[in-house]
Length: 303
Ligand code: C5P
Image (tube, protein in one colour):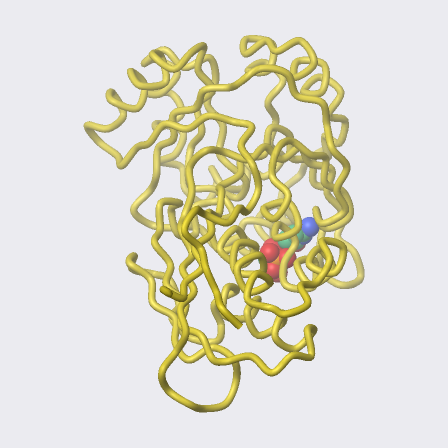
């Protein structure tokens, strides 16, 4: 029998991202609305054939800029599951197939970690509960609990404290990626130097989601990090303008950027916007909400 577990790791976009004060631990208090997107990476776990210390033998990714050592969140996630389970696990190799841009503000690294938590859990004799996986997820990174659960949720605290939010309908996105990533800590640090008012209420987004109205949602989209991302990368303003001119209802910087996410009226419009921006940038289309991390068919692990 083939021994492999594959899991999908879905990207996210922040429909609302309100950034409050800096806490004593250096993190900012957030009020955010996450939505999971159909765009995903694939995480593949296979048994390793080399003996050694730690549960991960090696990690390989098919995209530049992804660390292939123990600093990768997916590697950390695998080790954390092994440790928490207390079980004697055989070593594994991790393979990441990237569909989500690296350092793009779409939680690609976090999603890979969430999918690894799920995949490693499927190799255990006594799998950990979802509550324990969420606890490990929050310790590893602020966006990881959301990417584990997916759908549409409000995140508070560091972004790790989640409550579900009613979202009706399907939303169509065109995404424009940037060749060069942006560092999330740098964007937060930039924001701290700027004169600004925190925009914490997500009421307008919640109401638009209830009405399943893309036009209303487009007007309600908000990202407090956008000004900081644009200050570090002024060229993104051009991308936003170009997408809106191409017919998007609205363009925003996704999370800490530099990916620009364009909400469109329907699938056809999203295709058109992606095609027009595609002359200059790498683009994709996606729909939301999507599930969180999920095991793929054919996954099998005999213990
Ligand atoms: O939690 P995570 O490791 O993903 O966060 C990456 C960085 O983003 C943090 O080191 C911090 O600089 C910034 N951050 C923040 N406030 C948050 C989440 C992240 O300042 N709520």
